[in-house]
Length: 294
Image 1 (cartoon, rainbow, N blue to C red):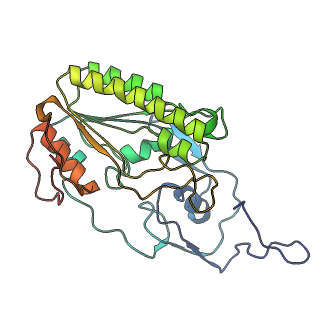
Image 2 (cartoon, rainbow, N blue to C red; image 1 turned 45 degrees about the horizontal axis):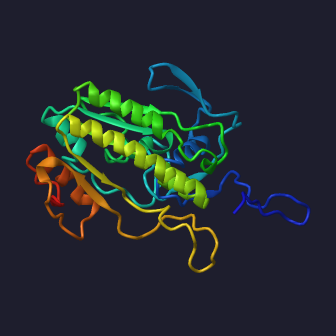
Image 3 (cartoon, rainbow, N blue to C red; image 1 turned 120 degrees about the vertical axis):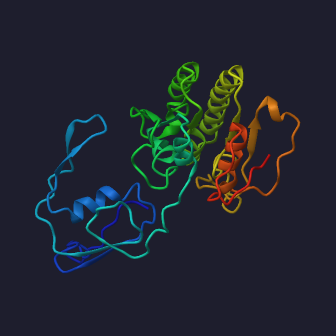
């Protein structure tokens, strides 16, 4: 659906937000609507903010005066937003994987390209922006020279891989968390040849990471939280299928110590962290409700 404004017979926009209105923001995820909320709700806009490099940056655009409106968001997109929240988030989880690893003194490295960087940091850390102690991060810029990623299905996977190989070789880290965006982002375009190229790219890149980790005597978990490009044709329409799928995803453990082991079936996302701790030879904290799949 293209951006749409309903107008009257004279072409005047009918739904234009004005003083005294109530705005309900129906998004439930917080990574995309935060900036729009700031534009509606911050008294000072644009505003100055300190970037991750420690340099002050001017954020926003020339909005004009702030409207006198009541602004309600479906969930809490970000702490400090001057809005009312319809459905509060559950309490913060304790002893999630990143926090547990940090508390017992492990070092960890998170890496992804721009499109998926929040997934290995903000979301993986239970909506926490700040890294844990001994947690390093590296974002690899996603391509900006194409309008859609079917035009560059390799995206920035080679750069993510190069950075990962460098960090693995450093012998500095105990735990690595990385994400390859290709299968999801290229799958959303509905372009089958490009999606095949995306999968081939990730296959090559994952192979390089596996070889590097195995050479160090480590182990890996290769999995996803949803599917996409494994189904590119809509069975009802015969046209392109661009949405996420609900099929079970693969989970592969690569570790010589567990060669020949049979993984448990009917796993869930909550089982991945306990499985990772099993590979690390660590006890599972009582707060984790999942179980190791090994």
